[in-house]
Length: 206
Image 1 (spheres, rainbow, N blue to C red):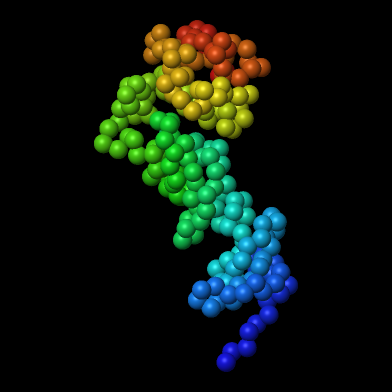
Image 2 (image 1 turned 135 degrees about the vertical axis):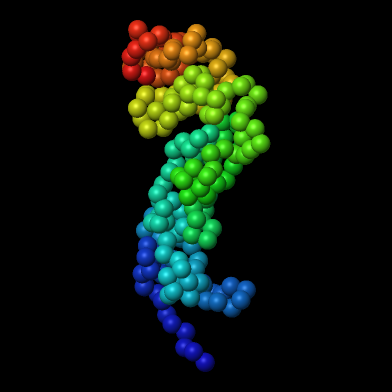
Protein backbone atom coordinates (compact mmCIF):
# COMPACT_ATOMS: atom_id res chain seq x y z
CA UNK A 1 0.00 0.00 0.00
CA UNK A 2 1.39 3.38 -1.00
CA UNK A 3 1.89 5.73 1.94
CA UNK A 4 -0.19 8.88 1.82
CA UNK A 5 1.84 12.03 1.15
CA UNK A 6 1.18 14.94 3.50
CA UNK A 7 0.87 18.08 1.36
CA UNK A 8 0.15 20.47 4.23
CA UNK A 9 2.05 23.72 3.80
CA UNK A 10 3.23 22.96 0.29
CA UNK A 11 2.74 25.50 -2.49
CA UNK A 12 1.51 24.62 -5.97
CA UNK A 13 1.41 27.64 -8.25
CA UNK A 14 -0.81 30.14 -6.45
CA UNK A 15 -2.28 27.55 -4.09
CA UNK A 16 -1.04 26.85 -0.56
CA UNK A 17 -2.26 23.61 1.00
CA UNK A 18 -3.93 24.23 4.37
CA UNK A 19 -5.16 20.81 5.47
CA UNK A 20 -6.63 17.49 4.43
CA UNK A 21 -10.43 17.59 4.24
CA UNK A 22 -11.37 14.02 3.37
CA UNK A 23 -11.91 12.33 0.03
CA UNK A 24 -14.22 12.53 -2.95
CA UNK A 25 -16.61 9.85 -4.24
CA UNK A 26 -13.76 8.09 -6.03
CA UNK A 27 -11.67 7.92 -2.90
CA UNK A 28 -9.17 10.58 -3.98
CA UNK A 29 -7.75 12.60 -1.08
CA UNK A 30 -8.93 16.21 -1.03
CA UNK A 31 -6.91 19.11 0.31
CA UNK A 32 -8.15 22.52 1.36
CA UNK A 33 -6.07 25.13 -0.47
CA UNK A 34 -5.89 28.90 -0.22
CA UNK A 35 -5.24 30.88 -3.38
CA UNK A 36 -3.13 34.04 -3.42
CA UNK A 37 -6.34 36.02 -4.04
CA UNK A 38 -7.84 34.67 -0.79
CA UNK A 39 -10.22 32.16 -2.35
CA UNK A 40 -10.39 28.74 -0.62
CA UNK A 41 -11.15 25.56 -2.56
CA UNK A 42 -10.78 21.79 -2.16
CA UNK A 43 -8.48 20.09 -4.66
CA UNK A 44 -7.48 16.50 -5.32
CA UNK A 45 -3.92 15.86 -4.20
CA UNK A 46 -3.07 14.17 -7.48
CA UNK A 47 -4.17 17.30 -9.39
CA UNK A 48 -1.84 19.41 -7.28
CA UNK A 49 1.15 17.11 -7.68
CA UNK A 50 0.69 16.77 -11.43
CA UNK A 51 0.29 20.51 -11.95
CA UNK A 52 -3.33 20.34 -13.08
CA UNK A 53 -4.48 22.79 -10.40
CA UNK A 54 -2.40 25.91 -9.81
CA UNK A 55 -4.96 28.53 -8.79
CA UNK A 56 -8.56 28.99 -7.67
CA UNK A 57 -9.59 29.18 -11.32
CA UNK A 58 -11.13 32.63 -11.00
CA UNK A 59 -10.02 35.65 -13.01
CA UNK A 60 -7.47 37.15 -12.79
CA UNK A 61 -5.78 34.25 -10.97
CA UNK A 62 -5.70 31.97 -13.98
CA UNK A 63 -2.42 33.04 -15.48
CA UNK A 64 -2.73 31.49 -18.93
CA UNK A 65 -5.30 33.96 -20.26
CA UNK A 66 -5.85 37.70 -20.28
CA UNK A 67 -8.70 39.35 -18.38
CA UNK A 68 -10.94 40.80 -21.14
CA UNK A 69 -13.79 42.02 -18.92
CA UNK A 70 -15.41 45.11 -20.45
CA UNK A 71 -13.89 44.66 -23.90
CA UNK A 72 -16.08 44.70 -27.03
CA UNK A 73 -15.82 42.07 -29.76
CA UNK A 74 -18.16 42.73 -32.66
CA UNK A 75 -21.62 42.87 -31.11
CA UNK A 76 -20.52 41.33 -27.81
CA UNK A 77 -19.50 43.19 -24.66
CA UNK A 78 -17.70 40.99 -22.13
CA UNK A 79 -19.43 41.18 -18.74
CA UNK A 80 -17.63 38.69 -16.51
CA UNK A 81 -15.48 35.57 -16.24
CA UNK A 82 -17.52 32.43 -15.58
CA UNK A 83 -14.95 29.64 -15.45
CA UNK A 84 -12.48 27.46 -17.31
CA UNK A 85 -13.23 24.37 -19.39
CA UNK A 86 -10.39 22.30 -20.81
CA UNK A 87 -8.00 25.23 -20.23
CA UNK A 88 -10.25 27.61 -22.18
CA UNK A 89 -11.59 30.66 -20.36
CA UNK A 90 -15.35 31.16 -20.54
CA UNK A 91 -16.85 34.66 -20.52
CA UNK A 92 -20.42 35.89 -20.13
CA UNK A 93 -21.16 38.46 -22.86
CA UNK A 94 -24.01 40.85 -23.61
CA UNK A 95 -24.96 40.96 -27.27
CA UNK A 96 -26.10 44.20 -28.91
CA UNK A 97 -29.43 42.52 -29.64
CA UNK A 98 -30.04 42.10 -25.91
CA UNK A 99 -29.23 38.40 -25.52
CA UNK A 100 -26.66 37.01 -23.10
CA UNK A 101 -24.23 34.33 -24.24
CA UNK A 102 -21.20 32.49 -22.81
CA UNK A 103 -18.23 32.37 -25.18
CA UNK A 104 -14.64 31.15 -25.10
CA UNK A 105 -12.06 33.91 -24.81
CA UNK A 106 -10.00 32.58 -27.70
CA UNK A 107 -13.04 32.66 -30.01
CA UNK A 108 -13.74 36.26 -29.05
CA UNK A 109 -10.19 37.51 -29.59
CA UNK A 110 -9.67 35.70 -32.90
CA UNK A 111 -12.99 36.94 -34.30
CA UNK A 112 -14.73 33.55 -34.54
CA UNK A 113 -17.45 34.70 -32.15
CA UNK A 114 -18.81 38.22 -32.60
CA UNK A 115 -22.49 37.86 -31.70
CA UNK A 116 -24.87 35.62 -29.74
CA UNK A 117 -25.75 33.93 -33.02
CA UNK A 118 -28.40 36.42 -34.09
CA UNK A 119 -26.44 37.23 -37.24
CA UNK A 120 -26.28 33.63 -38.46
CA UNK A 121 -28.21 33.26 -41.69
CA UNK A 122 -28.82 36.99 -41.89
CA UNK A 123 -26.65 40.09 -41.81
CA UNK A 124 -29.52 42.49 -41.18
CA UNK A 125 -31.14 43.40 -37.87
CA UNK A 126 -34.79 44.40 -37.72
CA UNK A 127 -33.63 48.02 -37.45
CA UNK A 128 -31.57 47.68 -40.67
CA UNK A 129 -28.22 48.58 -39.12
CA UNK A 130 -25.43 46.05 -38.72
CA UNK A 131 -21.67 45.72 -38.70
CA UNK A 132 -21.89 44.43 -42.27
CA UNK A 133 -23.79 47.29 -43.88
CA UNK A 134 -21.66 49.88 -42.02
CA UNK A 135 -24.27 52.59 -41.38
CA UNK A 136 -23.16 55.81 -39.70
CA UNK A 137 -25.60 55.29 -36.84
CA UNK A 138 -24.45 51.78 -35.97
CA UNK A 139 -20.78 52.73 -36.36
CA UNK A 140 -21.24 55.71 -34.01
CA UNK A 141 -22.91 53.51 -31.39
CA UNK A 142 -20.17 50.86 -31.51
CA UNK A 143 -17.46 53.53 -31.33
CA UNK A 144 -19.10 55.08 -28.27
CA UNK A 145 -19.25 51.65 -26.57
CA UNK A 146 -15.59 50.94 -27.30
CA UNK A 147 -14.44 54.44 -26.25
CA UNK A 148 -16.35 54.26 -22.96
CA UNK A 149 -14.87 50.84 -22.19
CA UNK A 150 -11.33 52.10 -22.82
CA UNK A 151 -11.86 55.33 -20.90
CA UNK A 152 -11.42 57.57 -23.96
CA UNK A 153 -14.75 59.23 -23.22
CA UNK A 154 -16.11 60.04 -19.76
CA UNK A 155 -19.20 57.84 -19.91
CA UNK A 156 -21.92 56.38 -22.11
CA UNK A 157 -25.61 56.77 -21.28
CA UNK A 158 -26.69 53.47 -19.65
CA UNK A 159 -29.80 53.02 -21.81
CA UNK A 160 -27.65 53.47 -24.93
CA UNK A 161 -24.94 51.07 -23.80
CA UNK A 162 -27.29 48.09 -23.84
CA UNK A 163 -29.63 49.07 -26.68
CA UNK A 164 -28.82 50.30 -30.15
CA UNK A 165 -32.53 50.78 -30.79
CA UNK A 166 -32.77 53.27 -27.89
CA UNK A 167 -29.64 55.05 -29.06
CA UNK A 168 -31.03 55.40 -32.58
CA UNK A 169 -34.43 56.60 -31.30
CA UNK A 170 -32.81 59.34 -29.19
CA UNK A 171 -30.07 60.46 -31.58
CA UNK A 172 -31.92 60.07 -34.86
CA UNK A 173 -30.48 59.17 -38.26
CA UNK A 174 -27.44 60.93 -39.69
CA UNK A 175 -28.44 63.70 -42.15
CA UNK A 176 -25.95 62.34 -44.70
CA UNK A 177 -23.22 59.69 -45.05
CA UNK A 178 -20.62 62.43 -44.43
CA UNK A 179 -21.98 63.43 -41.02
CA UNK A 180 -20.33 62.26 -37.80
CA UNK A 181 -21.73 62.03 -34.27
CA UNK A 182 -19.88 64.33 -31.88
CA UNK A 183 -20.23 65.55 -28.31
CA UNK A 184 -21.24 69.16 -27.63
CA UNK A 185 -19.55 69.46 -24.22
CA UNK A 186 -16.29 67.47 -24.26
CA UNK A 187 -16.18 67.35 -20.45
CA UNK A 188 -19.38 65.28 -20.40
CA UNK A 189 -20.12 61.81 -21.67
CA UNK A 190 -22.10 60.51 -24.64
CA UNK A 191 -25.60 61.15 -23.37
CA UNK A 192 -28.95 62.68 -24.40
CA UNK A 193 -28.60 66.40 -25.07
CA UNK A 194 -24.81 66.25 -25.44
CA UNK A 195 -24.41 64.77 -28.92
CA UNK A 196 -25.22 65.96 -32.41
CA UNK A 197 -24.52 65.09 -36.03
CA UNK A 198 -21.91 67.39 -37.59
CA UNK A 199 -20.72 67.79 -41.16
CA UNK A 200 -17.12 67.55 -42.45
CA UNK A 201 -16.60 71.29 -42.01
CA UNK A 202 -17.28 70.92 -38.26
CA UNK A 203 -15.01 67.95 -37.70
CA UNK A 204 -13.92 67.58 -34.06
CA UNK A 205 -12.83 64.79 -31.67
CA UNK A 206 -15.56 62.39 -30.53
